[in-house]
Length: 239
Image (tube, rainbow, N blue to C red):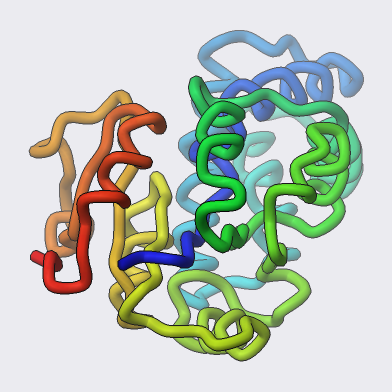
């Protein structure tokens, strides 16, 4: 039976989209740039593309932080400095937290019944600030932040580093839960553990491009579907 659960953080436990929108809007306002819905949406698209490049090892984390703003400002034709924007945004993003629906209830339900771990590609300072704000550390045996480990999901080296810090770890009794097919699910596949894709707003057939080849073991639309799935998923039940 499953005894170890790895959770992604952003858009799995925390509502990153909401936090991003609020922090970005404040950052743009402080720089004298109108935070229109169109501008914020465009930033999100650019930002996601940079994180995908990081997952592939094409660019560094520092380049992610700066490129997303440099590309946005170039499109907008504004002279704002990417370095200043990145610093302001990161500071604002690390303040406070917003939960995904059912996240707190889920952790309370699983705590004590499973060994829970957090696996995140997010920036260390930002993630630690939000975790402290939400007081989530009490639920997790350990928290693995890629910036501190030196590798990012889905790199097998990231997962091997995590596994090496877990007493009596077994791949056969472990599962990763996350919203990203290319980071969380592909990472779990690379690491040889079970995978659960959490996608509350996407159709099962709504993937495209390279994501089409990534097949999770299970899918859930609501976080509170997970406890029953884990209870009924025995060691021979992988598909």
